[in-house]
Length: 309
Image (cartoon, rainbow, N blue to C red; front, side, top):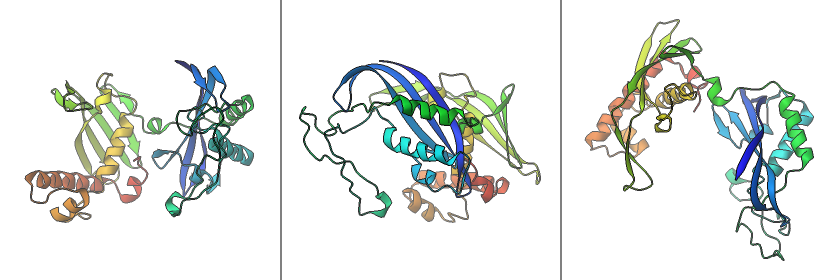
């Protein structure tokens, strides 16, 4: 199978609960033998993937798209975007064929209140619902409309681009509110044991180590910690484009394990499933609380909420 990216663009569409929401569309032209929902066999087809980014996270946030506080694109563009998203997102992963009637059914659980596709009748071609992935062919007018929506607006940065470090030699820098963040390259670690799909698949890999320092420009309070990069980046040069994003995600997640939130070892173990009688749990608790308390002295709660997660 071969593929070519026809369009990949991200735009800001508005705000939801006071925070900006952006949407990315990717259209690809793929070459592969596949079957469509009309049981036509094709060798070339277009695919569409649409994802949203909000508050440092991403995924299928179409419900938030329908409840925007403010809209930054034309209303017709927003309406068409929602319709196309619901109809054609991941059009190469369709479980039903044209002979299966969509029956609207709602879950009783309000947390999962949405329509479900169910088979209304048997397919005369013998296809069983969900037995394989079929192609919902992407009409040319849909391709043109998506391109029009995503090229008529200023391009928005990706999640990782929003937190990309500015390089100065072996140091990366980033300003977050009143805090100056520096990331210094320390070097590679000694080989560490890595397990694969099973305990038989053992490998030894080195990963990049950095020293992260955060200085508040107003109070001059400082904190620092060691950061170990993802194993996935070990074959790439240091300072992968996603490093700044990963560091800020780490700071946000570590910020919640403070002595104020978990005043005792027992409260920590109850939350995270540790055995309160084990030495490992006590050591982990001490390290996490020290890190969380350090962060809280430099980052206030309001700024933490702006960091990716």
